[in-house]
Amino acid sequence: MNGDHETNNNDQKTPLLPIHRSQSMNSFIQSIFTLKNLFTILGPLLCIFICLFVKMENAPTTSANMLGVLVWIFTWWLSEAVPMPVTSMSPLFLFPLFGISSSDEVAQSYMDDVIALVLGSFILALAVEHYNIHRRLALKITLLFCGDPLNPPLLLLGICATTFFVSMWLHNCAATVMMMPVATGILQRLPSRTNSGHRNQENSNSDDDLVTNFCKAVVLGVIYSASIGGMSTLTGTGVNLILIGMWKSYFPHEKAISFSTWSSFAFPLALVIFLALWAILCLFYCRKGSSRALSAYLDKTHLKRELDLLGPMTFAEKMILTVFSILIMLWMTRSITEDIPGWGSLFGGRAGDGTVSVMMATLLFIIPNKKQPGEKLMDWNKCKKLPWNIILLLGAGFAIADGFRSSGLAEVLSRALNFLENAPYLAIAPAVCLISGTLTEFITSNNATTTIIVPLLIEIAKTMHIHPLLLMIPGAIGSQFAFLLPTSTPSNVVGFTTGHIEINDMIKTGLPLKIAGIVALSFLMPTLGPMVFGTDKPVNNVSTNYLHMCG
View 1 (tube, one colour):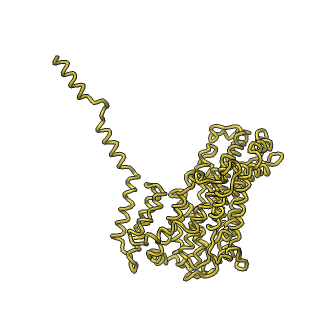
View 2 (cartoon, one colour):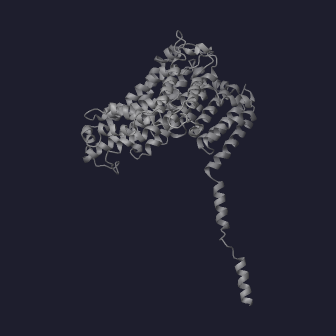
View 3 (cartoon, one colour):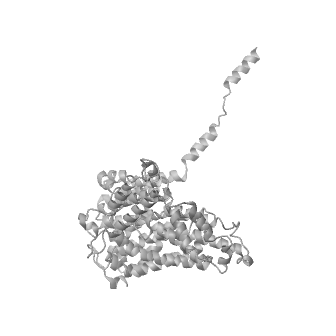
């Protein structure tokens, strides 16, 4: 009996589940002492240290506070210790708490005409994606460029040009995501090749190698064409919008940069870089014999079959294309020239590009799609994929630009950069492109790079006594020359994950492309810039001296 009783007691004391107290404690400690948590704490600590111990001569205390807040925000941005969209909202509470600006003032940065432009264009992009219009467009243009017999360089030009055109009106990442399935769908008819990176030199000109090289050229062409096309319009990338917003914030009395003004400069630049890309891809990847090797697997018949599977254009597709075309026309004609003011003058300059962007996007929720009774072209459920992270990042960039100026930190930096007064512009501009591009390659996103570097460039321009746009534009566009690494941009990631390209392919193509971009931008900025942006005219206290500028 006693034995039975002892056994019962032991059973009651035995836990139903094993307890690993030491392991649980160790895992808990390890979960606390992580690199991300370290950077999460480091941001506020650095901010407090700067606010307490950094003293700036002849500057208000808000200058040091702004510097501390910037260090806090950029620490979180660069380390991604806190999700970037959440970090982008931090100015909403940091600026009021540190006396930089009121809550109402900082909140206005998160919804202005530029943000409205982004919202409207993103909704239109979702409509294009939902109705598969991009695929139809890509197949038609590629079919046009295919050639008979097959001409690989011409086919590559068609695929790249289509991506370039799509990314002019949609965000470049969205354009890459849309176009990559189209490009890989064309490549699916080609024979797959494993271990393409370890080929014999003797077989380098074999049919398999020629096909593999063409696949690489197509994927590289799509990701780089999306980045290049995106820089040609305001809607193609967030960087352009950040730049325009900062120009408006720092120089509110100057003429705003409209959609048509930006495209008048950026489109020729993008076109030059695009042609350089095509030449580089043809030189490295479209070797002699490619036409013969590809003709066995790819011809116009395949492309026509893919296009026929989509069927005839529906009423919904035609209406979305009509709305998009009208929007583009309104963007391009709001402000044409000083002699031809455009339709914006009818409203006393109160209507902006964001006005018509949201207006045309609203039409999508009103026009029926003629598929189901009462169903419209778009509904709000389809808008759940809106990239709010980009919108919040843009708002944070505008808020930082305002805080930079209102806190007095901009003046402090201006005095610190006096040593650059005698530096020649033709030496500074390429360096600015290179620095901003390198930051994007290795450290942060091009949006964050632009947010960090443009306020500094404005102060450098004041010190050098040149027009601010002569440095702002190279800094912003230069941040988009991130062509070397898979992780540099979301577009690069999309292309790398297809498995058709390797890092050495990106470096081999991206390095000469980066050089071509820097050379083209450094040449066009002082030549085309004055005609488009009026960079030969003074801005407030910043005077332009071309003799001094060109050294």
